[in-house]
Image 1 (cartoon, rainbow, N blue to C red):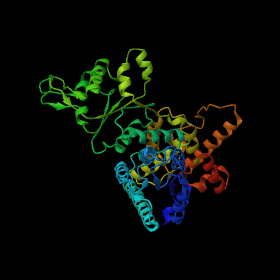
Image 2 (image 1 turned 90 degrees about the horizontal axis):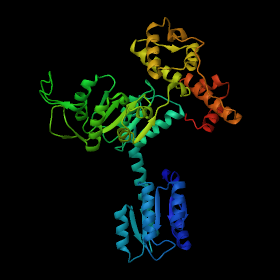
Image 3 (image 1 turned 90 degrees about the vertical axis):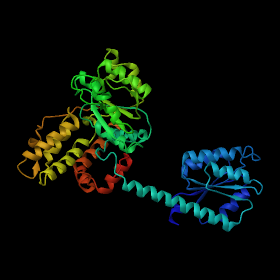
Image 4 (image 1 turned 180 degrees about the horizontal axis):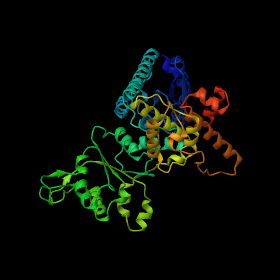
Length: 453
């Protein structure tokens, strides 16, 4: 089986003679060995074996099964998909059953028949392979939750990994970043990757709604609660029940409303305006702001206790000007989108790409999108120039520079490679031409710099 060579078999046995016998019996599989719990976990971390055969009696107390059960627990904690086959003594069936109850794949009694052990290991490999293939096919069918975010920048890729890690928790997430950096795209991606994806994603901008209306928008109101309240209306928090609530520009929320929001976060019960009955709500809260909340807390404009309720996980989104190569990469994507919308085949001219790379983008992605949209409408030919984008050659962006020559060289190489890949829209051959190197040299550079193709 081809998968045998991808992930090895781990044989855990402190009896060296029996260890050799098992390896000889299973010689068709690529195997590694260990003789105690510590060395076994080292092999698990190094090789990520698909299948493990193990004795429950391991040093330092080979007459007890405690070390074996600890090892089984650690292996399955490291990778629950690992198939563990427990080898036990003839009179040790109760421990074998306990091991299976803990998650072991199967058990065999010693002395074992070589053919039976081979068949058991082969079936375990086959099941592991089928489950991995099933996961891969399911992942291919699921839409990418972060498909709305386009980046090659290492900082933004780390942000994406953070979003993926926290998605399936119920932790409140605070997204910090300048206006136009993509906070709502990340919030929607967080929702789509969470186990609440079948619930609603409800967003409300706390800065866009007048203070006297924001409370009723968030918490809802009962019929007759105020003039114009003709019917009972649930608020955004209730509407998001079972899903995700995004509170955008949370830094602009009025202080009296902050107290009511804090009470909801503590009790998970909302009370509508004009109502007297609490309504339980199950919702995950994601907040976003461009403001410095630490400074707001110092100035008495934001409650510190509310901040710690909302900021269980804090994600800082870098501005576009600090994302190497992303401006050109996003510009290509926007040109394709708006070209398709207007039925035009459009390309970015070299002077436009240079200007886009050099500009500081104070309005971030939103400004870039608006400039490209206007350029796609106003461009006379098939090429969008710097003038069409509304940028001058003198628009520059300042860079921080180190005095460490090695770091400067590495940073310059990374910026150059990322910028070339962005300008070439991901085409390796064209990026290599821009850099003046061969394709193999560019592949080597990308590998050394940790950049994916």
